[in-house]
Length: 135
Image (cartoon, rainbow, N blue to C red; front, side, top):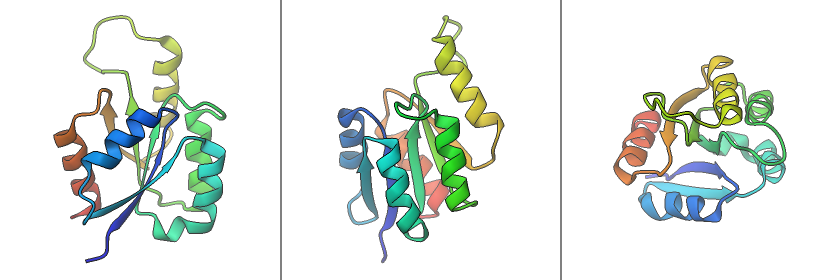
């Protein structure tokens, strides 16, 4: 069985490590990047091999909506999962910038097929990825 390749773009090494450690190594190959521009460069040359892109709404070098736009320019049918601190059911005041960034990404495309809230829960992560990649 071929392992599915997942590109993970997140500024926090701890988050990337958690994703890497929580996924079945026999099913998935996690390709980690901590920098959006380096990840885009890798994606540009390897997009046909990558099955899923997981990225954070709080991007550092470019906005998450711009990151998604560039990913789509490379591969229009890119499948993405957004990582966010924002809980839609949460009535507490959340960082307005984060919420606006998330809304911008989620309303502009159908490429984002799921959202995972931090802290990332193993069962939710695995279930989401299995559903998206049909494994």
